[in-house]
Image (cartoon, rainbow, N blue to C red; front, side, top):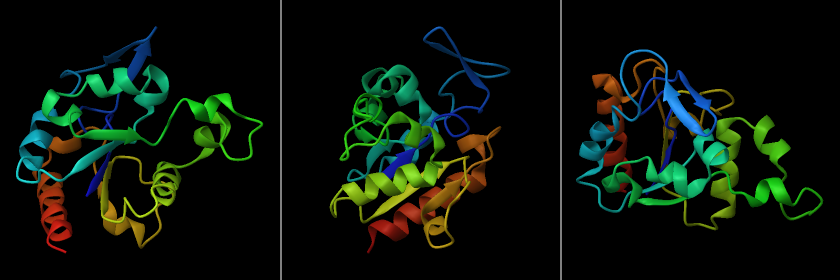
Length: 170
């Protein structure tokens, strides 16, 4: 099972801005304030792996973005929907340039990852506050968050728990 994970609007409110290369949350709370909720929800599901579907990977680099997560989450991370080769090989026919990534919806970024995973991403969920462009069929795999409340909403937590339990029993 793969969980595509956004940060802003999921693990903390979505009003995060970069100052230099340092992310800062505007308003009440702190970065990753709801990450412990995800740790708790995933605890019974040792086989769940995380793919970062957050703009943090592009802005900060994969390792740095991953390392903002608590150890119990960062240890589950196996990749990201963005990788630095996307921005370097614009002329190559087998790689996408950064412009595609910038124009793609979050769903398109995730769908591309799944198509390239060659069967290793058949069982997946995504948790995100960006719902633009999701097909009706793919929406079954999406746990939509309110960007201001993220995982703090009990309904969102329940939906994630329900979908994890249902997906992992198949």
